[in-house]
Amino acid sequence: MTTRTLCRLEDLPPGATKGFRPPKGGFTGLFALRDGNEVRVYVNACPHLGTPLDWAPDKFLSSDGKNIVCSMHGAEFEPLTGLCTRGPCHGDGLELVAHTIEDGAIVVAADAAL
Ligand code: FES
Image (spheres, helix red, strand yellow):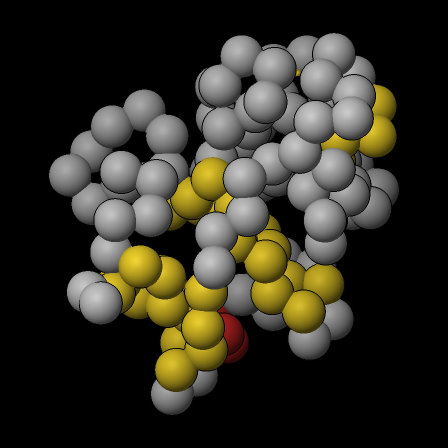
């Protein structure tokens, strides 16, 4: 399987989020978050309209840092499950992307969210 390295773990400290554009450009990409030692990678597309969630580069969380929030209409998602708990897509979920940690880096399949 061809893989893609997103970033090193030390570039994603606990409580941080980081966005990744598709390698060849495009509208959506991926984002990663770290909650303690847990890492999640999601497709950066809101289930409501499919638009990117970030409200500024690498900014995906609500002001209190407890939830992922969509910049368009304020839907909120649980960080570790991607489940929408509030907003127009309540009950839907973000698309989780399988990842591995290899030599301290976050790695996904090369064709994830292209
Ligand atoms: S596009 Fe995300 S809540 Fe509407």
